[in-house]
Amino acid sequence: MGMTLTEKILARHAGRSEAKPGENIWINVDVLMTHDVCGPGTIGVFKEHFGAKARVWDRQKVVIIPDHYIFTADEKAHRNVDILREFAKDQDLPYYYDVGGEKYKGVCHIALPEEGHTRPGEVLFGTDSHTCTAGAFGEFATGIGNTDAGFILGTGKLWVKVPPTMRFVFEGKLPPYLMAKDLILWVIGDIGVDGAVYRAMEFAGEGVQSLNIEERMTLCNMVIEAGGKNGVIEPDEVTIRFVKSRTSKPFDVVKNDPDARYYSERVYRCEELEPVVAKPHSPDNRALVSEVEGTRLDRAYIGSCTGGKITDFIAAGKILKGRQVKVDTFIVPATVEVARRLDEEKIGGETLRQIFIKAGANLGDASCAACLGGPKDTFGRLNEAMVCISSTSRNFPGRMGSREAQVYLASPLTVAASAVEGKITDPRKFL
Amino acid sequence: MKKIIRGKCYVVGDDIDTDQIIPAQYLTYNPAIPEERKMFGRFAMIGLPEKSQGLPLGGTPFVKEGALQSEYKIIVAGKNFGCGSSREHASICLQEAGIEACIAEFYSRIFFRNSVNGGYLIPFETEERLVDRVKTGDELEIDVAIHTVRHLAAGKSFLLKPIGEVLPIIEAGDIFKYAKQKGMA
Image 1 (tube, chains in turn blue, orange):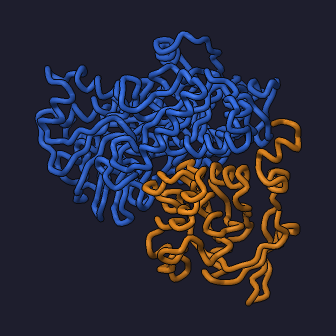
Image 2 (cartoon, one colour; image 1 turned 120 degrees about the horizontal axis):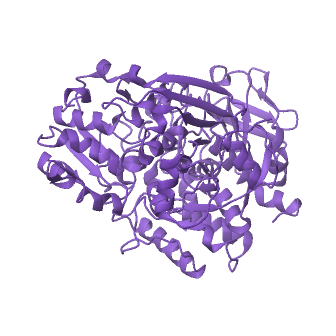
Image 3 (tube, chains in turn red, brown; image 1 turned 180 degrees about the horizontal axis):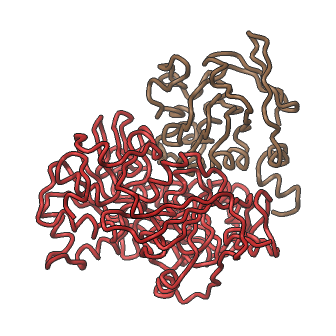
């Protein structure tokens, strides 16, 4: 019987010829990633169970990227980065991206592909729920906790339950007013925040193939908002060209068998879709932008692993060029590389950074920033009851700070259009 | 593994995510340091909006102001409990607060794994929606072996789903003890 690419990757990593949905199998891990929020706990678990002097299973396969609480006065946050630094030094880890110097990257899920750590056919675990982003590179990638990560540090293995795959096909190319964020909010609105619990979500069709690698990452990034175990897109020329531009390590491209079995299949026609938002307080609380148009805003936010890539800022720049924002607008590049490209990418002779500054937006340093609230002094954090439209991934109560704040999730195009008007606005008004 | 878990229950609704269980601002405490780990008990469930704090009435904080532990032993939740982030602090904070078991329709995958693999609490699932049958503060008694829960005042029993394939890990204590038993680590 044929296998999906998720089943095939898991089977290969278990040294088996076959893996069926529902089976529990032990698999070998290619890359383990951790960061400043879960790294200290993971290191604690590792030392407790393998000994204070234990060595990690493979120093070439451990990647540590501090990114969450970087630009804060919180002393414990700094102490946590010190713990990572010391561990990386003790273990002589080549892939530790330290804070405060040239090695600093920013948001782990964007830094991983930039640094060549995401490769087709591989297994990536990370102590962050948005690790599923890397499925855009045709690999199995998912989030885990400290205990599982500590176990992997010592053994290089983990048990997984093989997930059945839900397939989402997007026919036709995206019209210019839609982004991957709209597609994934459509899907989550249809299946719910529990619609894919314990399952893989695969994205296919011309609409997906015509997306650049960053937009594909946005699709896979938010599968966790439907409870998905992993998101995945079959690798093609776009994937392979990107990965080869970032690493010289060899990899195996794994594809679906023609007779692979899927748990379900949903087909969307891109031209029939419209820009959407997820209303407070759940990513599945979908509404057409036209249904909530005119909703008063206090703030707009563009950033995070979901919506802080250069593609997201180019989209926002198209709308913000030559216009002024009417509400406080926060721009947070996911990584230092994205921040650098804000000075390189131009629209009509102006760099993105110039466009954003002229529009009256506030620009922050590369990190997770207010996407998850964080310490009280975090850039852009919603510290009181306010209404915000955001290109981030999650809007449960308190996610961006105050429990009283209301967050609308939307594409960078819709966020930028709404910032200009000071109320929720359809991007088609400006395109 | 405890055979009987008995105590007061705290009832919450559907899709309670990890930002409500332990908001991100408290994640700077390191669970590997014992005195900091205790703080997770103090801040457990502090992200719940007031109307969601202990159903059906709401407005009942899970942990009393300034306390490190909760008076509740069992969480009763709707569907998809623990969704959102992968932070293991969510399972840890419930254990630190004194929770020994959760009863939900089903869990988010990562919360379930963390609870089992870390040995923090037993995540039971139900066939029927218990949230509508019990109130915050009710005394419950779980018989782990026969996977039933008894409402002590009403004298009524409800069937839980068998723990199933992760039972050996829960019996061993955590994934490390399980792997040692199997000669894997």
